Image 1 (cartoon, rainbow, N blue to C red):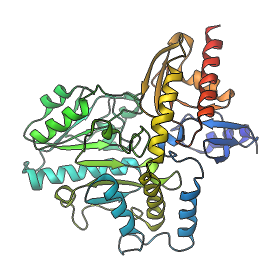
Image 2 (image 1 turned 90 degrees about the vertical axis):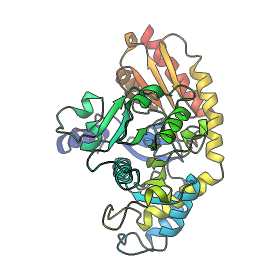
Image 3 (image 1 turned 30 degrees about the horizontal axis):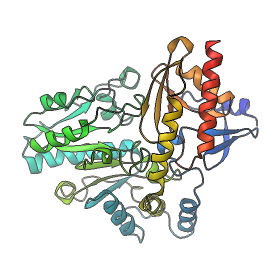
Image 4 (image 1 turned 90 degrees about the horizontal axis):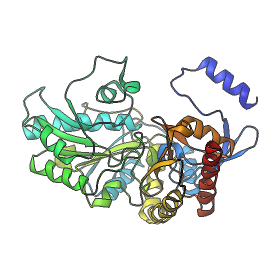
Length: 401
């Protein structure tokens, strides 16, 4: 079937919870994908950072293939021979003691919420049922009912209540707002070091360090959702590293699965993670042998520092090129190989710009009106990046004409 037929069938027989661009991808390699008609596109979304190491990364695929022939699932009712290496490696990468593996990013955020609340009751001494967590405006942590309950995006939130209590929403980027929201029942501050879905919003310099200090002073856990920003995307292993900040809990996902299987985790020290006992949290597939094999391959790639360096160097090149775009671009934000670009609304919506780039062979994703996001795999070449920016420049010229 051709693209048109496949899209028609998809729209007829699946829930309309996404509005994909009209392209049907059938194969991929590195930073490039190919549709069913054989046209190639530069992938500048990378599965929202799930594909940091590129499509079909040889080391990750080799680990997955080898594991597929041996063992894929035991459930956590038993030990398996890949778990210890994965848990140890991820703990060391994060500089923490313990890992609680899950599957999706939203599951990891829910896990962090449970851990923080349990820590609050058992360690901090918060009265039962009174724990609160400070969260940020314009956050995106997933789609579960608990998480959308503290979203400020009407599209994510409306129609899904009633919602769980216990969250206090404050302005992102304001350390003082965090300080004012904390009381004796606050157990955690949950934030994205860079807000991806909101348009790659980078907080003011010193914000993360100030939040870290506030949390320490008030005996509150600092929970960093590094699901999109972590594992090399911003030019360091974690976005928090840019301010030399170490949170109490890392929330990881997306790139941890190497674009092969869903793998997520919460990583913390024993004095925090130790509050979780048998039967209090779990997942049939969390920490399965295939996930651990893939995750361990990802950890191995990050240990070399090669991908962090690529994101840092190519990110500087990308942002320099984006700064040259001129008329039609209202703002550019980002860090490393990650950029949010606000297009002049008079030239079109983010969706329209994305569709125009699609026709030129570049895949991007819009968000919030006239903003588009660039997040290519970290294996992308300098020449391919330059070509992608050239295509955006041409689209803007056409829109101005």
